[in-house]
Structure formats: C-alpha cells, structure tokens
Amino acid sequence: MNKVFIIGMNNKFSANANRWGFILVGLVFLANGYFNIHRSNLSLLGIILGTLMFGGGIYYLFYGVFGFAESSRFSLKVKVDESAIELKNSFWKPSKKLHWVDLSVIQFQHYQIIFELKDQSISFSYNANPEISIAIKQTIREVAEQKNIQVIGG
Image (cartoon, rainbow, N blue to C red; front, side, top):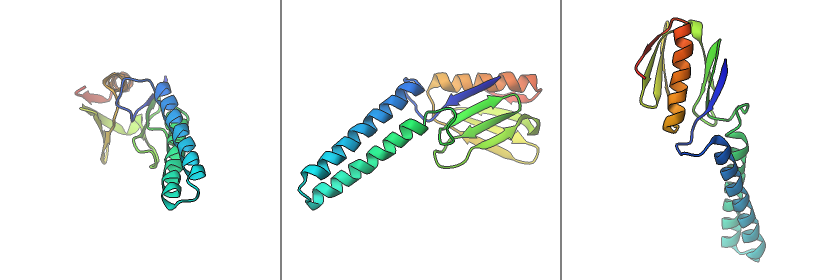
C-alpha cells in the first residue's frame, strides 16, 4: 500500500482543481504585472505595482505547479506506505519520515496527529477538508493495526 494525501487546502475542491486555480491566478497576475509595467510609461507607481503583481504571479504559478504534485518535494502531504509515514505541512521545510517500527502510540486529535516514539513525541498539525482528514486517519489506523501499534481517538 502506498497512499499520498495532498493537504494544505481547506476547501471542497480536489487537488487538481486547486492546482489549476493557482496556475490560472498566477497567469492572470503575470499578465497584469506585464501590462502594468508596459503601459505605465515608466512611472514609479506603475513599475512598483507591476513588479509586485509579476512577483505574485510567479509565486502562484510556482505553488500551482509544485504545491499539488504528489511527487514534488514542495507539496504539503501525508504519505503512508508499509515501511513509514512521510509528513510535510510546510511548503519550505523538509518532510519528516517516521518508520512504523519506531512508533508505539498514535493519537488522533482535531486536525492533529501525535506520534509517540520510543524516546520522543512528534505532533503533526495539518490543514485539510474533513474528507481528506478522515481518509488520512483511516489509512494510518489500518496500517497501525496491522503493525500492532496502539491508536487512540479518531
């Protein structure tokens, strides 16, 4: 089993719809920034606004392309497989990988999962719609029960 859940958006749209929404907004910002700079006759305000819109467009476009791809190192996700759980809830920070053999207890809370390891506790908070949150918890529970790991809450 290898399941990847894209998190980070708390709306009813799919990851693919969010991806295309961000890409579309990014392209609109890029075009608006270009036209603002091009038509401003080099006025200071036009250049500043155009540059800001152009930068925003690049950000939205980058996030749309890389933020919703399962294989991207930038996407916010929970990846569950037979050997480990990979957790990433920040666009710029690296993901955390927890191996099942190191886990003793998993505790589910409201949009938060607490993993008790042998020597430490790791708390993972995330932003997702209710359906994705339920699917994440069900998948983790299934694998944890197969591996005889205690699960609390949910």
